[in-house]
Length: 291
Image 1 (cartoon, rainbow, N blue to C red):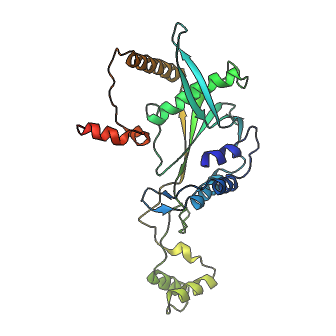
Image 2 (image 1 turned 135 degrees about the vertical axis):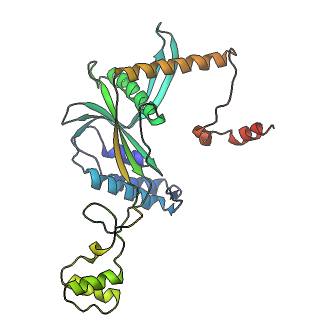
């Protein structure tokens, strides 16, 4: 739902589409989804969470980013051949948005990511592999459809991370650090500095200081527990060799898969992160235990 809302926001051209929080709410109402969980295991109501994530993103990055969307989110299919032109496989994916940076004129790709935590992206990571493969495939696709000239190349993928978490509403200081509520002792000390009566409840002391124009929220100490950022953008920059090596690798994988199908090399299991998406997990675990 977040991807759909952001796709409508980053519509083709220089003007942004409807606010993604509004779009998310409408999408959720048409197709409600289960509640989500943050990295601390706290249960979050999915509609409120999605709207908050969209609102926070626009509040941070604005609606006037200096980018022009060349192509919005769309699926692509790209046939891959060997050096002799023999068909090997079809690479299938869905890129989020190809854009032109209006300040530099460079082309890039937005890759939206929502998750419980924000991960570091490098060229030789799973997200780096995904980003470079999408950049290669999208260039082929866009040229085929006349949206990209032969001399135009993508040299960066901008990972747009949105962490699953509600905004931290605690006050923060000028350095952006979250503050605890001021203790009664701190309130009393500030009343004395102002020549005010320092007796009474916390509520009374706060009111006295506020009447003097003092923002009591700023009197609290810096919290020892600072929240992880909810939004991070990271540009993965690459050159020609990364694209060349990715193509070599996908060709090699396609060749290996063909050898498996022909019975020339054995089938073997490769447990990993993808197992949680597999329909045969239970059977696989039984097999691992000797069943």
